[in-house]
Image (cartoon, rainbow, N blue to C red):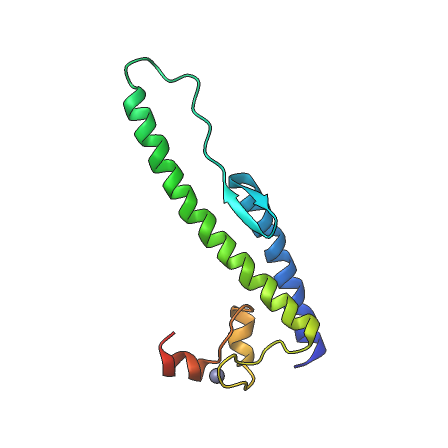
Length: 124
Ligand SMILES: [Zn+2]
């Protein structure tokens, strides 16, 4: 792959990594390589009598938060993997057939792990 394009993709990935980490740090805390969702703090102004509603709201909010956290973490893992591939010099090759992934595909989605042919073939 052209050095210029690779540099551009690397920059894009580093920016995405930074933005993912900042989003994650708002809703989760770091545990080594992983992230653990933070339980939202109970609101202090909760009026007496409505505590049951409050709690079910909190639980709902938390499960929503967990799914967001999981999605962000998954994305971050992919970004890190792509950056590692760039460092190792094997970025842009399909994980299934080892051929080069289409440039256009990588421009849109730098964390793509397979080429379009494999994507269609295996319906990934
Ligand atoms: Zn392939």
